[in-house]
Length: 333
Ligand SMILES: Nc1ncnc2c1ncn2[C@@H]1O[C@H](COP(=O)(O)OP(=O)(O)O)[C@@H](O)[C@H]1O
Image 1 (cartoon, protein in one colour):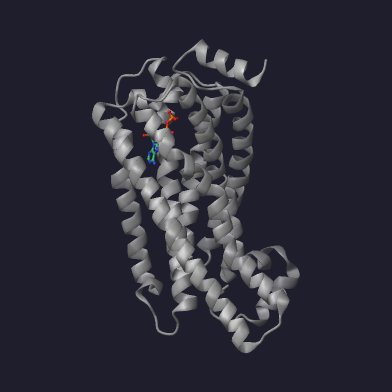
Image 2 (cartoon, rainbow, N blue to C red):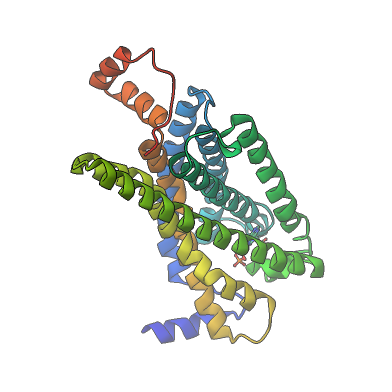
């Protein structure tokens, strides 16, 4: 069966179910892999950060990302079982009403924290000396709490308003389970989240452009020719940017069109079908973020790296013992 025939038969079988081989048999095993890897890496990261005092804003933001990633990972099994078609139809309702919203809530909270980390790095590298409020630990804790509260206020109504009585047929699309106000809230919260993403995107672009310039100027000024340290600094600081691009840009480039296709009627079934598949494919890249964030902790947070190496390498433990008097600190790069 060629792709077009497959698509037609898939759409004709039931006009309200866009699932296909891709969403039912390709993506679920991939989600299984990132669930296992994400759970292991984030439990390890949580265990490590539990031992590192919140002495800097950077560590505070990283700890919040670990929490968001753990919640996000916890939502995967529901999606996996549902997409494999292993659960009862009501599981689809649970996914629409609860676990998908938990997924998005933690994804966007994580995105905002990545933005705050970029801002903190910008202040630390481009704007020294003198402490800025953004580097104040108490302020960053308050800002973190405010971020969680704000995101919950914006996104929890997507749970409450997914309250229409469900049938096996209507549960095939989450939007059909929403009240009229629920559909409106879905639209508004989606656009607000997409806007928040692009604001963070622009902020990161600005911060990293300024950081690059500062690093370049400083290498020029001191005429250092240490290519190895230069390579490492760049690798560490740009890891966040690379992860952000891979995971979130593809999804946000398509989500706006997908949300339009959910909420207005002028899209053909074929376009909706294609948009659904692009959304599911790019959403997988966003989910992959739970495995890539721990790489950022390792590359950008010296306390985390030192503690990890201390636990896993005898040699590193010896060298750390020598510097035990030094306080915990994160590396600039
Ligand atoms: N950005 C978001 N923030 C919070 N909840 C969201 C967001 N996007 C979608 N949701 C919610 O997650 C559930 C699944 O949404 P969606 O992925 O659009 O549905 P579908 O799986 O039918 O394509 C819905 O309840 C929806 O309101």
